[in-house]
Image (tube, rainbow, N blue to C red; front, side, top):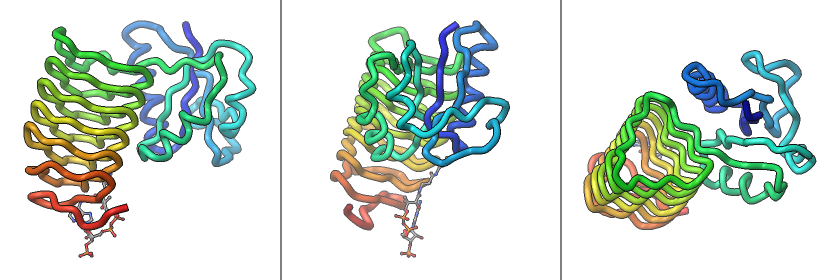
Length: 212
Ligand SMILES: CC(C)(COP(=O)(O)OP(=O)(O)OC[C@H]1O[C@@H](n2cnc3c(N)ncnc32)[C@H](O)[C@@H]1OP(=O)(O)O)[C@@H](O)C(=O)NCCC(=O)NCCS
């Protein structure tokens, strides 16, 4: 078994621990070493040790897999960029029940694909993407690094999602659109036209309400 640590001990971090438990229930792959978090914990977290703040990751002197359990793309990118220890690897964590088409679906590294996801065919997913529970990703879609999709997001076909996009729970993205880098899509939105970079867009149809 490979040792794995979870970065981020908040709600999603504990759900990622559940995801690893479910992967292990099919085939024992990972030994969960613990959680790293800059918030200090004085006790175990759901039965798993707290290993210290993120600076401790640079001191690891043996091979260790790490999963980044942070939803905010900006923080996720900052945390990943600060890890330079060559002992660290970032596996893809995929729930055993996820449906992924056999035809030309490419995944980078460090991706987290939770229970209930469906990815069809000819899809490119970059690195450190989170697909939270029960999302769907349609044909010929491109998802770039650090994007996070909250539960129940539906992405139609031929969609391009640029780096560090956050999509709130239950949002729907219609086919052949582009969502610009760093944009935030509100929960429940229906994206019916392409969205520019660095905006927050909400509603049906989704419209930018602010730029950041
Ligand atoms: C879109 C979002 C990021 C905006 O957050 P924010 O930048 O802090 O914005 P605010 O809360 O100040 O809201 C600004 C305005 O947009 C409205 N608004 C916020 N989110 C909205 C949404 N999802 N749909 C429609 N309107 C929304 C607010 O009511 C507010 O309207 P007002 O100016 O008339 O009062 C946030 O509301 C959201 O939807 N986040 C997704 C959360 C999620 O999916 N979590 C999953 C956890 S697993």
